[in-house]
Image (cartoon, rainbow, N blue to C red; front, side, top):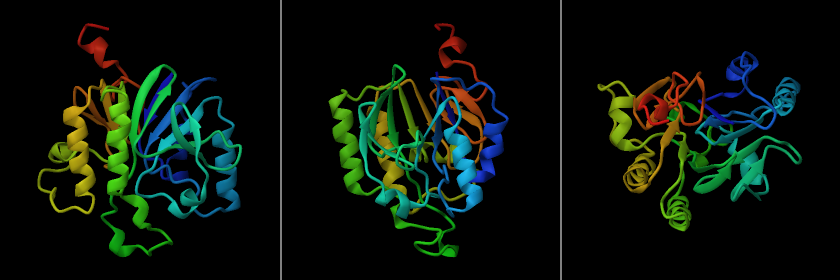
Length: 243
């Protein structure tokens, strides 16, 4: 079984997982960005990571905008599940699902594309608590197209950190600006993916909310749901009566 949740932000969201009892051996939990580990490499953080690594389920994540990218740029890549991944540390079961990849996980084909822009970057310190790597570059988008070409632009699920631009108004408060954001190139590309790709359901985080935007797009933050389900945990197929 695969489960999906929203931003963890390191220890900030760890209690959510400590209260979660559904994960079993052989299951996967995918965090839709802002996983947040590692961050300060403290002894306390090491204990938290060890706890995550000891879970019967395996923790996977796409990157968000609040990640320690200097750590991840130094980590080696390896093939796993039909795509490339990075382990948090050598031998760790915790893995980053990299940008632009298509994976086969527990019988599900999943396209992943992490990254987003920090709207508070003006108040952050470059290479201390903010990295320009947070937004995918054009090469990442070209690689995504190439990888989707290989599967005929058909997957089961999409997991990103931010959302297509066309969903911004429904995701954010309508009075907030949705144009001219630093990651507009990314969100416009996600519009392209949304229009071209044959998929069942799309999950994203970043906006700190839990709700179904429509039948096929779900914003996640604190909820943990089985893949294919909306925020209520019910399968979209079951709801439509064809499951």
